Image (cartoon, rainbow, N blue to C red; front, top):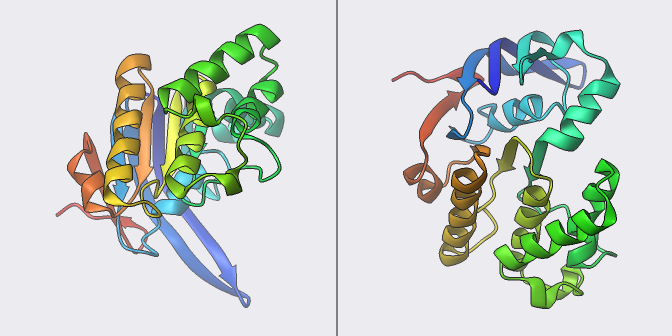
Length: 223
């Protein structure tokens, strides 16, 4: 298993009042699985994705990732796992506006310490895969929304991560572009045995899911 999450509880604070986001969530995610976290806004799916991405610390319960218990490792090790083993795709793209498409894809490879020749090879392959090599010198504001999301997919894929976490990756896209993005993610999973975990309530995403984990009010919905 890539992930084993047990009895996760998580709450935010709003004006000194606790707001529960997760209330005892448990799940396992296998290698090369395609899992969709589904639920309405406020159901806890984005919070769960943040915990799986090692962005938020576990408040109660536990997460085992790649055989390591997250509560037992240092912050440095958490950063290392996040840098090397997890690729992120966000609804609002989160590209660096002053960098070109090529530089955005390359940025995290530099942080990984990938040698220059290997880095350039990965960037070229990733941008060719998403059909944007001819726009590699364009900055995000010079690209359409769909093209920006393609750059985000290329950036995640170029890391060669064990898992890609995507938060509403089709929400800002038209249907055709959304289908193309999902096809690219499916190809990554099948070609590289990459685990996909997508938070979405888009029917198009749900139709293509290998498995759906439904959430409501911070709890798993079993019926």
